[in-house]
Image 1 (tube, rainbow, N blue to C red):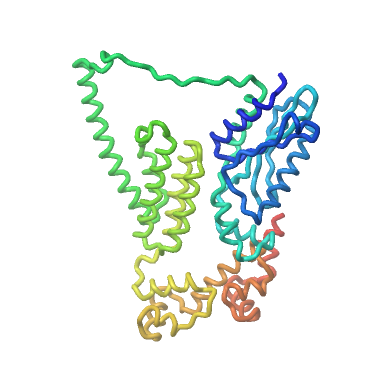
Image 2: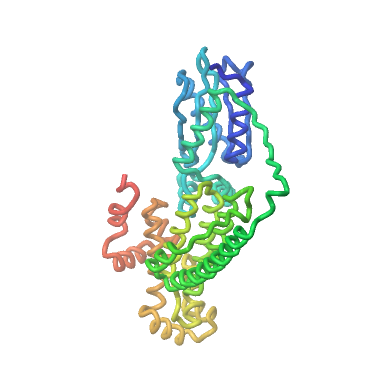
Length: 421
């Protein structure tokens, strides 16, 4: 059948409301009078990125001009800003009449590394970092299956008659509210069973949180299989929201457990923030279940790697200060003032508890950051050395080779992105 303009608009409006994604219809040049363009927008593109956005939309529309058949495909395009779009060619017996483009969205959660790569690749000024960060954090995240489902819906809507539906409620008589004795007994048994299940679930939750506090990933994953709870009844009109709310609570409980396990607040904030964003941008129940497993694994690994349980107060304060300020000049006198103790006492206590001196610890933290930046190709070796806190390339070179047994150049050859291409 031939698609008319009203069918296109209603189909796009429905997808827009369901997915909360921007949708744009771009007509072919010779059909613009009969099929004028329209945009359904919910995600505002920052002014600084609008030229990139228009370039992507125009590129997609131009490539779909030659797709003159009744479509069974929905096209996926990821641009050089790593934002993705879905697109479909609208055709009728006379040929191509326009394109529907859905997006932008992301295929994965944008972490700090992702944002840094975007800034570096496109030479965006540092003043734009907050704008870029907030824009990417606000974009929806869609996996392949979700994209396919959008394609199924919009293609079927466009190439079949659009039928409006009416919503009605069933009206039950008062007799339906009456239960007999047998039903009452069954209800009481169900209530007793539910009470036992709640008690058991709370016990398992305590064991799970203790496992996370200890960084015991294997035990935590094992206990997680025994915890079953469906919160859909809390918001019957939106059961997915109920499941998301539960995951927000779980994220908070895991964060507090890891904090009890000795993880500094900086690391907890970054991980908790990452999962909060991921939960909100997830739209299927299986994906939410996978997030729970990911949270267990990553919080346990964080405890294993970053726990400061067993360290004295002054050593904890010193480590936290170094982790936050390692890119700046740091002296023993400055650290001692921050910890409120004598420099020589701090030096002895730090070496006693960690087995290495303060200077070596600072250098290890700087080298760890430098290795990450070199893998990502974030500047020259000299620029990276200075940015992580070393005063000169020569000193950085000596420390790097001593700690890694290879030179910075050899490290980049072996692990840099260009070597993996």
